[in-house]
Length: 180
Length: 203
Image (cartoon, rainbow over all chains, first blue to last red; front, side, top):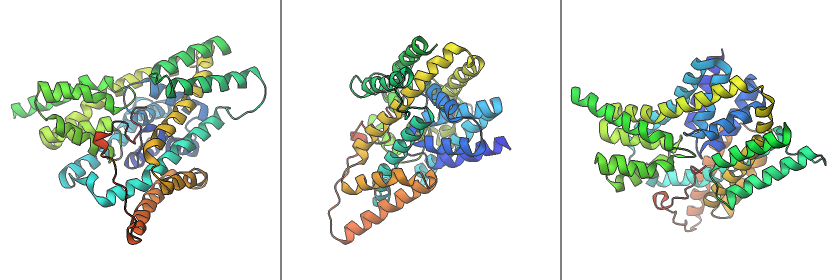
């Protein structure tokens, strides 16, 4: 049952969604592969659209994956599934543990969690580089130009500090010029 | 009763208006929250808003959603929390759905396919950028560096859920052992005073 698969995937992800959207990509990728919802390339396209929209990347990706696998009901269900844990946790903390983030145990958890979240994002980068043919080291126009686009994009983020949306749009225009 | 519904609608509408600016992370909301909630409505003061954002980062989920839900809860209890959460989610839900639907409608077009060949590579670059940004606040000493280093190959074998639990457990164990052995723990930065915070919400 696709709707149930979507719901329990994003509901359990919601409880562990530390570190912003990109740390969640290995979760989504694992579920997408397990249930055969779409190819990794299609998933990367969805993540690109999620990044071009306002709102949290993880929730946007969940909505898009839900929509393309099960239409409007899939989109709504995935959104509810990923938002529900936030509401449950916020209300619990707001009611019982208002000094939660100053608790030494919570600080200790985060001490180990933050570097692990970094590993999750590095892992996401590696697997998406693989599934989008960035690791092919042949000397063809396509792979060299893709590496250049990768380097230019990274430069735009790191050094020029451009807004990701502009970089995505510019990259798309470049793609149309180069590959169509 | 009528008053309650009026307040709930105000909470919903305030976050509904703020929501579309959350491009690339919840922290973009802060200036608008200051304007709408602190100055205009006087529901909270600036200090409380800073505290809410600090707390929101230590809970799973997006900062935009968590902080809106917290603020809604402060103003109107559980109903206020739900009103704020819906206010902040509905506009971005509709926008992302519209974009996704138009993409699926025309995704066979050769020009769009060509655009996405390049865009997918840019997405890999964004993820690398996210990793670099988060590493700057997560890697504070040798131990955290080792956890990060061990985490990447481990993820080829264990499910991300397991890895997260293992990471948290390692953190607790290391802090406990260091305390036993008499190491002084470094005083952590207060996330509220550190806008370049760990969750990578700027991306």
